[in-house]
Length: 93
Image (tube, rainbow, N blue to C red):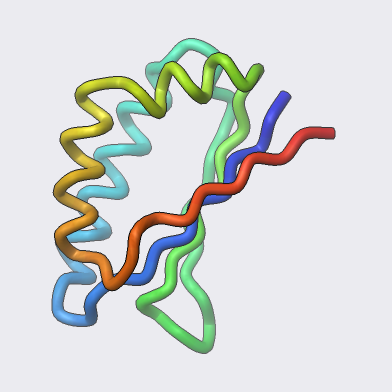
């Protein structure tokens, strides 16, 4: 199993659109082979800083999702609302 952490910093005026896109990504991810669970958090001291944590059965399952064309389309939209690129870190037990 792998745990994937994605950190995103949103431009302030786009928080609503970002939340909508993050929800769409979650719905899509839930339908992917190997997806176990996920959650989206925002920092208490910075409401524009989001952390998405997802659990996958394998690194291969995560990478298949990462390279999914539909996911990439949503990620491109997200990127246009962000101050910096998404930071991705992958952990295992």
